Length: 193
Image (tube, rainbow, N blue to C red):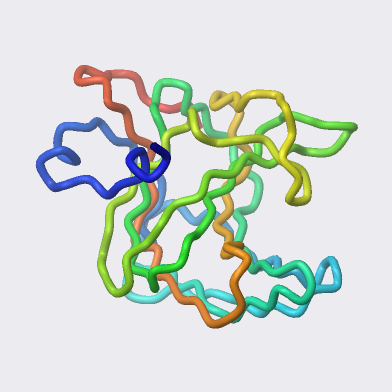
């Protein structure tokens, strides 16, 4: 069922959804202040980084599961209220590996910020538009799934993109755009910034 939820949309389906552009990496688009965090923060050996060029963020590296096994890029502090929306839509061109979209809110577990994760599949070499519904994000802390709290999309404070599919080897993805989307046909609300 999860694979169905994260299946790419055809053009006619995508046109019927209401969206809020968040960034598209072109001049004048929001700059999220992306930065790199690899598993070396916990003794791992993965490598990864990114650059922005020609309207795309290019995220690439090499994961090594002998350690943490992940590479990630994260945004600086944000303030988004996306409670009027259904989820996050990413347009990507990738390598066929599974990736994870991350969100942080104000939620805490034992005094530390909770991360919310949702995995999505990519097709090698294909440009895809992938919708990631908020309802499938699960809370976790340092890779361990938590029982709660549920995600509060009115308090989004950070986005992240992870390569953490527990596979060794090179990875590469072009992130072309990020939007919030709604499947409500007459959405007139906008996000608070």
